[in-house]
Amino acid sequence: MCGLPAQLEREQRSVSVTIRTASADDLGGMVEILEQLFSIEEDFKPDRGLQIKGLKLLLENNSGCLLVAKSGEKVVGMCSGQILISTAEGGPCLMMEDLVVHENYRGHGIGTRLIERLERFANSREISRVQLLADRNNTPALKFYEKNGWKTTSLICLRERI
Image 1: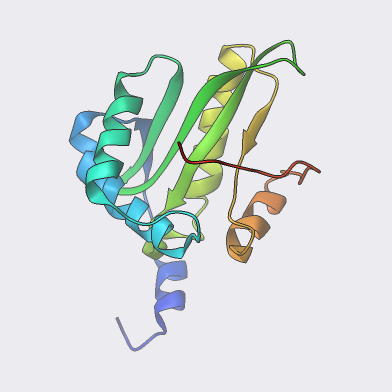
Image 2 (image 1 turned 120 degrees about the vertical axis):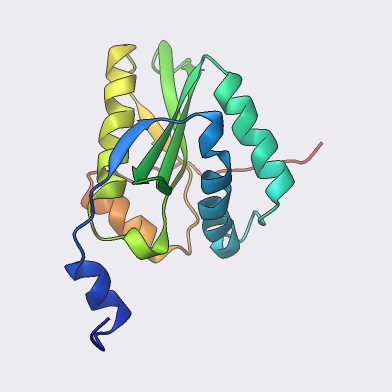
């Protein structure tokens, strides 16, 4: 487009996005952007079959929220949150997972809007804490969360495959 660098083209493009609860029709688009996320994470790898299986389980689950951001018919972002019980909070908390915006649509506030929508979901269920896990080497994501008011904690994530 007019010889501009791709980053400038993205910044100059006006993006109209709708954020709503995901449906089965959105699975293909969500898997495509999950591939972008899992291709840069050290702990996970893209696997279309596993991602579809997980997304279907989230769609069937009543203890969470699965959101999509769409520009026309194209899925350009997504975010999920799952309700957990926190003994520290004495009630429910929300684990945000898979916040991702398609690389060609970043920088337009879509990620921030997804977080805001997820926080409204949490508030409607009297959830006082939203938390997330992030790849420690994904500097752009960490800067995005910091810009949006998220704080790091002293907790670390551990896991064991069984």
